[in-house]
Amino acid sequence: VGYVSADFGDHPLTHLTRGLFALHDRSRLEVFCYSLRQSDRSAPRAAVESAAEHFVDVSSSDSAAIAARIAADGIHVCVDLNGFTSGARTELFALRPAPLQVGMLGFPGSSGGAFLDYLATDAVASPPQLEHLYSEALLRLPPSYLVTDHAQTLLHCGILPPTAVSAAWLRGGGGGGAGGGDEGGGGGGDSEGGEGWGLREILRRRYGLPPLGVVFCCFS
Image 1 (cartoon, rainbow, N blue to C red):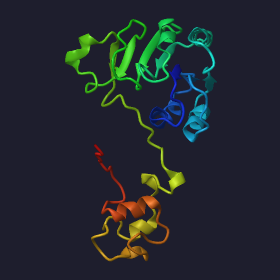
Image 2 (image 1 turned 180 degrees about the horizontal axis):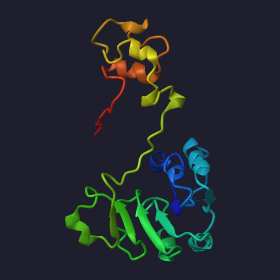
Image 3 (image 1 turned 90 degrees about the horizontal axis):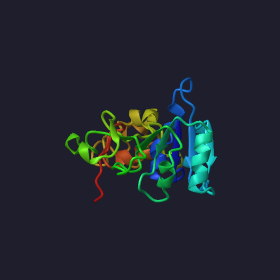
C-alpha cells in the first residue's frame, strides 16, 4: 500500500494520520509513504518516517518519475491523501501507477475523473442521495472516514494524555473547578493545582472540568 501526500510534516493531515501507518497488519501489508514535499524536520514528520516500512522523499522528482517509482515498487493500492489541495500531484494518479487507486482524507469530495477508483468517505460527508455526483465508487467507513491519532499528546507542553491523570489530581477532587470546593482541593496545592499535577489537570480544574472526557469547543 502506498500513501502519497504533500503534507507529511507539521500539518493537520499528519497529526491525524501519524498513528495510522504503524497500525497496518504487517503480515498482510507493506507500507510505503511518498512525500511530495521536503522534510520540515518536525516531530510529526519523523513519526511517519519511522512508522512506515518505506518512506520516500520524491519532492525533487517530476510526476512522471514519481509514478514510475510507485509502479516499480509494485504498489497494489495507491492512496491519494491530498486530492485537490495545496501541493498535490493529481496528474501522477492519471498516469495509473497502481492497479487500484483511492482518494482519502485530504479532500472529501470527488475528483471528477476516472483515475481514482474509490473514495474513502462516510454517510455524512457523502450522503447516499448525492452518490450519483461522484466519479469514484464510495467506501463509506462507519461511523466516520476521519482517522485520528488516538495516542497523540502535547507532552512537550506538559499536557498529559487521558490515561495519565495523576493520583494527585484524583486525590484533590479534580473536577471541583475554580468556583467549587476549597482552593487547594485535597491535593495540598492552591487553586492552580496541587503538587505533582500536570498542565492538563491544572487547566481542567481552572475551568471546572472533570479530569477525563471530551471537551466540545466552537471558536467560530
